[in-house]
Length: 124
Image (cartoon, rainbow, N blue to C red; front, side, top):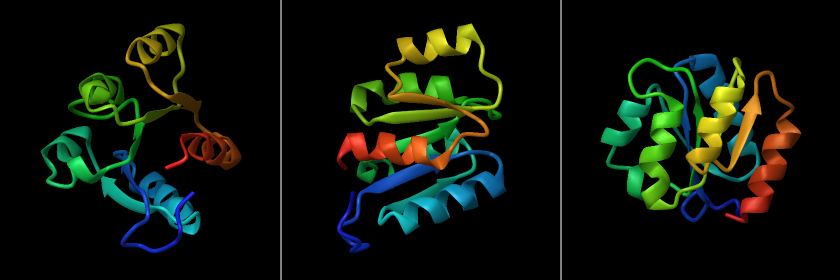
């Protein structure tokens, strides 16, 4: 977990087309000492100049444009940990997430303690 200093705190990108989810996730991350950057779509994240400064990405799977699984495949080369969230888990989504080397696939609604535990394991 981070030191709490916003200038040195690990930066986590939250990519979700649902504003309420982005806001809640950002509030949680900031309460844990992380710096959160919000993106409405994976495409907005990919076009962002902040992308190289991201330590982890938390993304919804189902979004317009580039979806979370496609984002995970694109980010694999950057070796940035990806945590995906979905309200519609299927064996196919789980298989694709595993193939994209997703760090964790959380099913909505998920317990925030599961996300916190995964972030702790990352030791950002």
